Length: 445
Image (tube, rainbow, N blue to C red; front, side, top):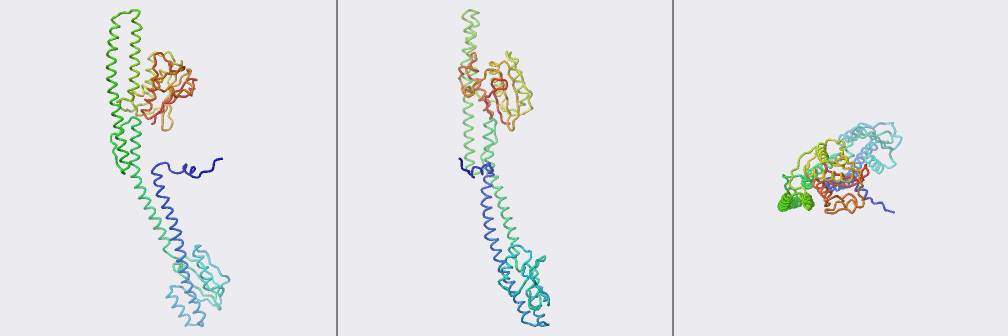
């Protein structure tokens, strides 16, 4: 029984890109700091300040109650109440004969209601009933005295801290400002890495990136410079190999050409025909070796409509006079940057291989998201699943099955896979709907 791992499930919803993860590293600590600051500084500070201000307001009310209780009704008390109201900035009036039936605090914010209840209860105890109700920007307070009700209108700012909203505003504003700066900074730091990834991907697909230059942080520059050095070494190796193979081709084909001329001058003897066949077989094997070793060569990348390109390849195969039946399925128009001759060699090898082992061969093209797949299906004997990877080994022929070709050297599928990988794609073998083998060339769009 597997234990539930929260981190494994969290990975599914977390960002997968470097920019998203870096931004998360910035946002999470910022969010934690904001939560701590909101609780530790804002909420607690607001409660403390509100409690102190409520105590001051309760003391003012107690002072007004003392005036009413210690001075008899008349001009002297009214003058004292008016003077106190003016100095305290309260609206004070005494309503004789009225009553407060209960001790209640009306609808206020929770922290203000709790502070008023707590402080007024401590200040007045059970001696006085009072009612507090909220007006627009004021608090209406009515206190029951022995001969009437003391009515007061207090500004809310005398009890509740008014800078709380400003604190929240500046806290949110500063957080958004820091987040914006972090996004701009991280975007500039991630862009060189994305550029490096694009250059590496383009190079893997056989496309040139002439304007790629290292920039960004020191570590990114080092990685980019290492990529440029590696690319130069690979290109130099391919160029040297191509030049060497060109020399080998010239050196080997020259004596073979002389041998063909000498055999042509010897006439049609009994021993001449086998020698001619051997010379032709040597030339064909040499061309196949060179095709395999040359790989992508120095061919330039160009835009190709795959539907038209496949029609051309199939037409060429049909003109070659194959004994099998070759058909091309309707294909959607897809324009792709490829090495035309290299891809043509790949598909030609697959079609030739299919025609040698099947009577019916179908070629099709499908678009699958960010990839296109070219299928070559046949109705031949196929290759067992366990041995399909073995069929790609260079200079290797299976004991039974598809690679028992007359004069073959076991390079057809190897050349086709190298051509597919030179375009950043892959060649895979599977079971064909026709009953034989399906060869699928998967290329990125």
